Amino acid sequence: MILAPILAHGLPSPPGIPVPGYLFAWAAAIVLVASFSALGALWREPRLEDAETQRVLRLAVWVQPACGLLGVATFALLVYAGLEGTPVPGRNLAPTFVYVVFWVGLVPVTVLLGDVFSLFNPWRAVGRAVGWLTRRVSDEWIAPPLAYPARLGYWPAVAGLAAFAWLELVYPGRSAPDTVAAAAWVYAAAQLVGMALFGVDAWTRRGDAFSVYFGLFSRLSLVRLRGRDVFVGRPLSAATELPIGAGIVAVLCVMIGTTSFDGLSSTVQWSELAPDLQRAFTSLGVSAHGATELAGTAGLAAMILLVAGIYRMGVSGMRSVDRGFRRDELARRFIHALIPIAAAYVMAHYFTFLVFQGQAMDALVSDPLGHGSDLFGTAHAAIHYSLFSKAAVWYVQVGALVCGHVGGLVLAHDRALAVYQAGRRATRSQYWMLTVMVGFTSLGLFLLASIKR
Image 1 (cartoon, rainbow, N blue to C red):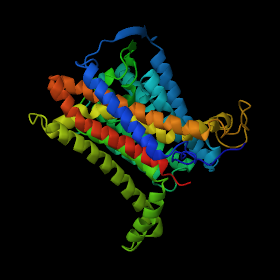
Image 2: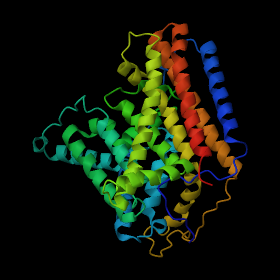
Image 3: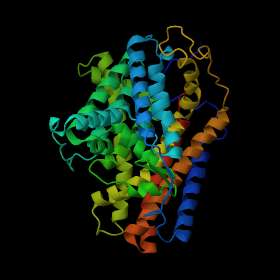
Image 4: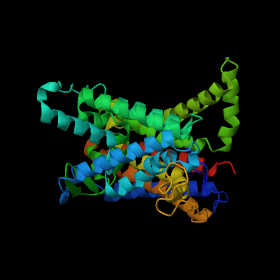
């Protein structure tokens, strides 16, 4: 079996981009400006707010329990593989499944098919099963759940996403199978505690980091799952129904900022800056190992703050159009426009990671523990790095960035028409959001074009 070692970082774009990166940046900016002009001229009333949906399917009563059981079984297999399988990351199922299939591969699936993760969420399935069993025995055994505090909002999800990103991008032992298994146990335990305190549904909607993460991406899809009913509607329209709460802005800033840091960590600029940061920390008495982690942590935090600052600039500019709205109110009402950008960053920065390292699953499903089994006859499958040409990879990455930012412009313009009502004032408010989109596009292209060759 020939497998590349598992790295939690996305694989960089191949060297030899088809044309200079600055030309792509100018072309992307022109596309965004043209899209903005077209929206102002042709999109004169909200079309996504309160868009109608149509029910197309009702799932059988056994589908959700069966999917939940499969999710629990998969989770158990991953933990077992991480603890009992080979310590070699590239030959153990756990790291590849978590970092490639789950964290990256499920994003495009979610954008296309809706919130698939909610069907297979293992800790949600366990929480519901425990609640069902308890109610069958006696309602007096457990107290009713606490009301979910409004001030808590999405902050548990923010903490969970930031912690996972730190593990994925900063922690030196991130690819070790036993580390992945231990992290999975800790996260599952935290979710079960949250569900026990505030109820399964209330905690899943705002406290479960991965449910929030994939739930946001599902709002870009035309497919919506509500209970057992499957609906279809206009793509992007579900993003306008995003429940606003404390921490929702931070969730999107963490999602975009962590992916941006992943791109930054592969650039020449970071390779020159990181040693200086490490020396600064060692001069304070920190060990070399600790200085490396602190440098990565500082870079990760800086990218999150940069994304937050760019968005804050756009919101402040919008407020100059009409000071009847508070800055925090505008930030929350327009934050859904960053969802397509978050999806674009994932696809652009992790595309090669997904299409190449994802091929390792062929071998790993046959030998999940790395002990030499061959359950499906594919244990010796190899990764084909010639699957995509260098130019094709670059075009996909740039296309994902541009499409994501155009989607963000559409959502922001549609919301501006609903908030400001007057067409001219709504358009003027979005000059600043156009600046934000161009800024995010330029940042994404800079990171892609600045990788170490």
